[in-house]
Image (cartoon, rainbow, N blue to C red; front, side, top):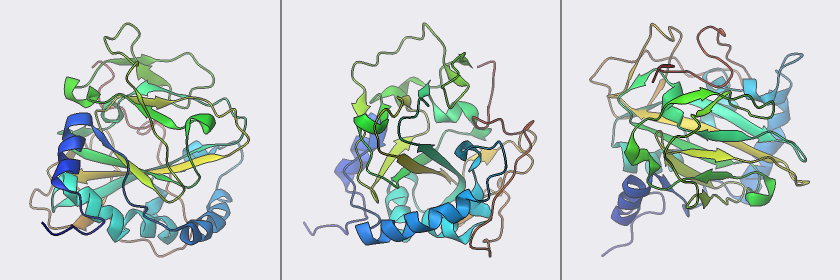
Length: 276
C-alpha cells in the first residue's frame, strides 16, 4: 500500500486514538529553526499581560493575534485533526500553560470537557510544545482509555499551587498506575480526547516548560451561549450545516489579546455543569 502523507493519520493511529484517548509520536509540526522564530515572538505577547496577571490569562488570544492564529490554523495540524473529527470542524480555544524553572504549579487530574459549555463531547485538544517537555519539567500525564468512562464529578481543590481550581473528586474510581508520561520535543504535538483524564506535576528543573493547547470541535458541537454569550470560533475545514456556532473574523493585529468576563469564564476555564 502507498505510504500516506506525513500529516495524514493512518487507520492504525485513528484506531489508537479512539481506543486510548490520545496520540503521541506524530511528525513535528515545526522545525527547530521555526520554533526558534516562534519563541522569539512570544515575549511580544507576554507584554500584553497586565499588572497582577499570570500567563494563565493567555486564553483565546488567537481571536486577536495573527501570531497565534497562524499557529492554530497551521494546515499540518488541521490535517491531523481532520483524521479524528472528519472534514467539518472549527477552532474555538487556545490557552498557554507555561511553567517557569523551579515553579510549584501543578495541574490536578481532570477532564477538559467538564469545564466547557459544549455538547456533545467531540473536541480534540492539540498540545504544542514550545520547549522540550518531559517528566523532569512537569510534562503532562494521561490515563489511557479514561475517556471511555464518561464525565466524572469534579470538586474544588484547596491547593495553592494548582493551576486549575477544580479536579476530579476524591474517591473517584480511577487508577493512575497506568498513566502515560508525555514527552515532546519543541515543535511536536500531542492530541487527546476532551474526556481523557490528565494532569501534570510541578517543574523543579532549571528548564521552562511552555505549551499551547488548541481546542478543535466538530461542527456538530453546540456551545451553550447562555453560559458563555461571547463564545466565538473560526471554521477550519469544510462547512457548518448545523448553525450552532457564531464565527469571528480572522484577526488583523500581530499581537492582541482577548478578554472574558470572570462570571462567564473563571480562571480554570468554562464549567459546563458544577453539579455533575
